[in-house]
Length: 253
Image 1 (cartoon, rainbow, N blue to C red):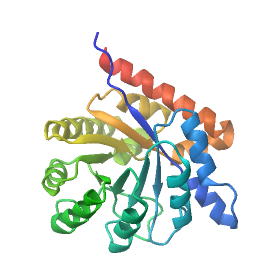
Image 2 (cartoon, rainbow, N blue to C red):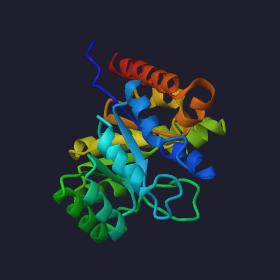
Image 3 (spheres, helix red, strand yellow):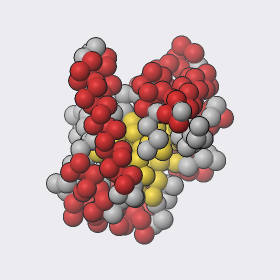
Image 4 (cartoon, rainbow, N blue to C red):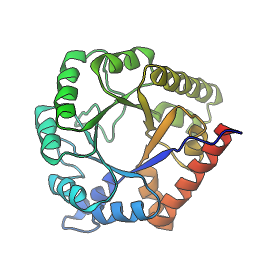
């Protein structure tokens, strides 16, 4: 039996800031949440600085960069403002995502194939600042080919359609979506890209997708912050870490 390849867990702390901003003030603090998540086993922290600052704000990014000991992954739109902020704070990584102000959350993958030149410029500027760039894309061959051509070293596969099919108890659709993710992860690895995945994952789906050894990192936020209301953030992260480890061990067997 081969040893399993390590699988990293990135914890997104956006919705701690959502709760804070609902009332204003400083509580609960997303930076404290990041520190708790790291102590519980998170390998990094993800935060999405949106153009309308609906949850994470600029000061959160500054404090995260100053206080956490693990890598910071800044989710961002490919705008001049956000590229400038990233180059100022220099997080370990930046994940470029699509962004529409009317959406509740990131609702789909980036159209890398349709925005090659604009994305190539943003990726190049971020890379020159020493920031590792990923593109958040659907599990689609054309998007992965575009990400490779653009020069991003990492992609993050959007897992929302798979998770939604499972939640709807549509077994055929879920199986088809998981097969798409499996093929996309293999395609990206064969092209020399590192593969991450995220959106809608819970304990069950994280354990399942962890069996795909082509995936190096899962980024999970909303579910963990929701579970922390009932069990505490430390317990939720530890339970997620254990589920991922079980899945990775199954994939290596």
